[in-house]
Length: 356
Image 1 (spheres, rainbow, N blue to C red):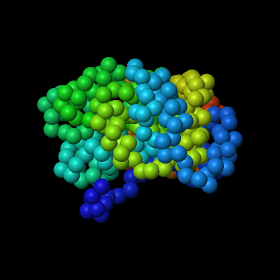
Image 2 (image 1 turned 45 degrees about the horizontal axis):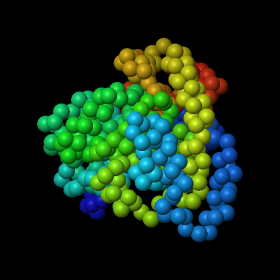
Image 3 (image 1 turned 90 degrees about the vertical axis):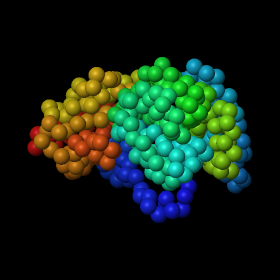
Image 4 (image 1 turned 45 degrees about the vertical axis):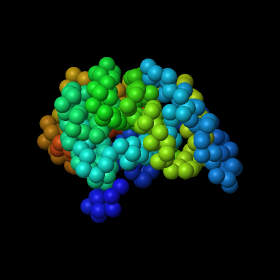
């Protein structure tokens, strides 16, 4: 991180509200969590009077098993680098890969923190429409140090074709370019992971899938040179003992993950089918099914600006995300997929806002 780059940097807007009187659709967090979380946290807290084991053996074993189930490759515990959330894994990946003056492929529209981290590293972002990232050829890859892909993409919610993404990884290896795949929301769908693919760094967030964003737990997966750099640069004790214990507990709960995927798929479809006139689901309109726990909505046909829709929902007790903060979007809001009753309330409120 360059000090002079920090002077010019700004914070990135995100969803999420601290007002518990509002129904939260602005942050993409599972409204449910696995059984036993509270007891696991309490047990770990009792041992927090000592430093955690910096090797995090239980967490890394659970994360490796979890990643292996989602990937075509076996992931070893040694390939797992614990981090306090998925964003910390992204920062660590960029910090160990990118030098000042480098060029980095950044998808758009996508997660705003990618640009911020590239800027803080003193590098320059080369914006590419997110669907075209997998089509980058050898000549394009030869001039960049890092390619970033968000799978499924935030805020659009659609996933890359797995074979196309693996082919991109192969071309990146040939060009000696690292591929960073942000799989923060991949756990919500039965889509294949690139964890363990040579030359690829995968960043995973636990707290969204398991409904614990305030816990801050995640990990990176890499092999070879990329793994060694991540492991060396990682801060000591960068995952608190309660976060490590709860993370390992959640990663082992396969039944919870399966139930979550089933609910999210059904409820996402129901939200898309129930949208009021003039509100269009972007991924569905593009002929690509979303797989993430959120839906990007274009409200242009309602005659209302996105901020007016956001304000109207807030007046009715529902927080939705103003997605115009994402590069290239000017008439969009993003809504999370929650429980059936909550989703019914969202649809009712959206209808009231656009019809008022």
